[in-house]
Structure formats: structure tokens, C-alpha cells
Figure 1 (spheres, rainbow, N blue to C red):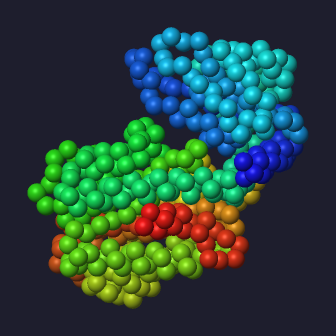
Figure 2 (cartoon, one colour):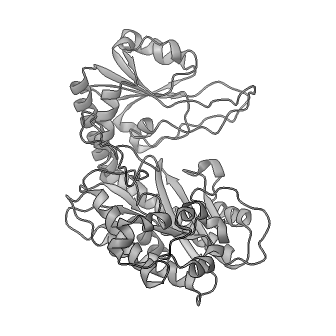
Figure 3 (cartoon, rainbow, N blue to C red):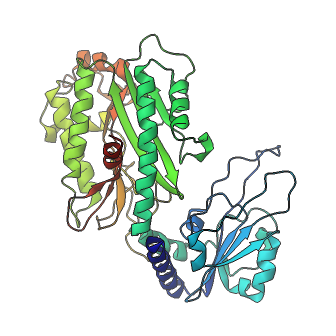
Length: 437
């Protein structure tokens, strides 16, 4: 647990700095609890507060909390109710417990009773919609200054965090291979999804996000999550965007496959994959992520020109907005405790923000690149009729070629990259596939 020891030392230092900078004595991080549906008593799947699992690898302990006072050993309250309705909660002896003061509570109210007057000095971070937590007399609820300070520094991952993300990517790659094989065997979207889950013994609610499993033209819907139950007459293409979790850390991988290797679409898949890898090789500490995004647009514009989809030079295709009709989303995002991890618009720890880019409004990351950041690189090219409609009478667009590509939907390739101070950078996703052989 040497990596974890270093990690929790870093987390403590970051909280010490954030508390001092924002004037709070201590912090109470609530793990959260399930919410029930409207007019129902059936709860939605529980998702832990990311700042709770920042401290410790515990993701399925609702109504628990971490109390941290600057410079002192963190106190972890794990909720273990006396409840004959549900399976008993077993608190396994794990190495991380030696770095905290672990206290088991049968009632969430025991947390406030144990803290006493300390509670009034603590900033509360987390959801507080339910009693008795809603009425706790804390110093503040989710103060923005404190959260901004923490989120700004969370962008740089510790060695322990990166190690967890390696494991998450290995799980996801294992499942991706199973999904790929199911596609080539002619499975439906739902059958492919089931193969994905079975490959890693995972329930759907244990994934970091809803998987995108898209056959044929469905690949043109960027967040497609229908999971059709019927097998199509012909499975021409397959786009899968799906991840996995390990110790609360996320993997987010996208792959695209063409059933036939001798089609224009198959060439498009190969070219986008190549462009993605070439862009990753250009990543440098100190450059701005938006610069990468624009460079990827130019590379994709070259593909559009080479495949006779659009006329023009890469520069003219980009400047006239043509490339955005085929590549409308951002190049990528921070990833870690959350799939779309926080801090992509923060200029500094004080919480000043970058304005959202008007040319590229869906770009989630505008910061300069630093060592130990982890972000995705996910270019794509799609045939989306809604985005092509404004160019219906434009002679620069080769509508015959576009019609040829339309039944395939689109292409997206996504990997997670660990930035190194001195390259080469670590590609968590491709390394995971390579490890599987």
C-alpha cells in the first residue's frame, strides 16, 4: 500500500491547503445515499460522492462520512446498520484502514453525536437532502471556494490513482474484446451489451456510465443508449463506448469496427484511428488542450478531403466550419474519479473559469497540459443529417460519398492518456489491450 500511503498524504496536503485558503477549520465529506423515484419507494442505483472515494477505495457504503481536520488523522465513519431487510454489510480488514481512524456506526445520527461541537466548524461536502443530515449545524454546505480549490488540483493524479485507472482499463478492454466478438458473431445490441457485462462479471449499475452499443446508422447518435433487442438484417458497423470501474476510478474506451474490410467505411475507421494516435504523439506539457482539439480538426479535415467527402484544404475545411458538421463534439475530457472529471474549465485554485469556447462549445477541457493529468483523446467522424442540413446546397460536399457512408453511422476512437513530464505518454487503453494480447 505504499502508493496509497503516498496518495492519502497528497490528499491530506491538498485539503490542508484548501481549508487554509478558504478559512474552514475542517471538512465532513458525506458519501451520499440513494434517492427514491417520485411517488415510489424504489431507490435509484447508488453513486458515491467522488470526494469521498478520493480518500479511500470504498464505493458501496452509503450514509458514511470522512471527517478531516487540518493536520490531523482523518476519521472515517462507515455506516453498518442493524437491518434484517438487506444483506449484512461486511467491513473487511484492508490495508488502507491503518491510515485512518475507522469508526463503525449503526445509525447515521451517530456521526453528529460523535463529532459534537466539531460539527459546527466543519464544511459539509455532499448531498444533504435527507434527514437527519439536512439539519446538521455545519459551517457551510458545499462552499464553492473550497470545492474549486480541491477540483483544480484533482486534475493531477497520484501514482495510486493512475494505478487504479490501469486496472479499470484492463477490465474495460477485456469486456470490449468480448463485445467485439459478439458483434462479429451477429449479435444484437442488447446481446453485445450482455456479453460485455458477462466478460467482467459486472452489473449494469456498476459501470461508470451507460454504455453506447451502436450498430450501423445508430453510431451517428453520439450518446445512443437504446440497446435494440432485434438483430439487424445486416450488421455493417459497430461503435462501442463503454467503461469500467476499479476502486472507484474510471475507464472510458471507444472502439469502432467495420464488418467488411474492403469498404470506404473501413478505410475511414482506419484513418481516424491513425489520426488519433498521431495526435497523441504530439501532446506536450505546456500546450493548451484546445490547441490539440484544433489540430485534430485539421487532421480529420485532411481525411475528409482525401476520401472525397468534402472539397478543400484542411485549413479551408476547418475555417468554413465543414469539419464541425462531421466532428461536432469535443476532443476529450479529464478522467479519474468521474468519467467527465472536474476542473477542465478552472484557470486556478481560486475558481476563476475559462469562458466556454464559442467555436467549440462542447469542448470540456480548456486548461494547459501538465504532467500527471489524465484525459481522453476521442476524435470522431459521423454522418448526422441534422448537422449536414445547413450545407444541403453546398457543392463542396460530395453527397454521393456521404450517402455511401450514411448506413454506417460514424466512427469514434477513444483512449485515456497519462501525461508524462518527458514522453512518451502512457496510453492506458491501448496498453490494456496489448496486455491482453
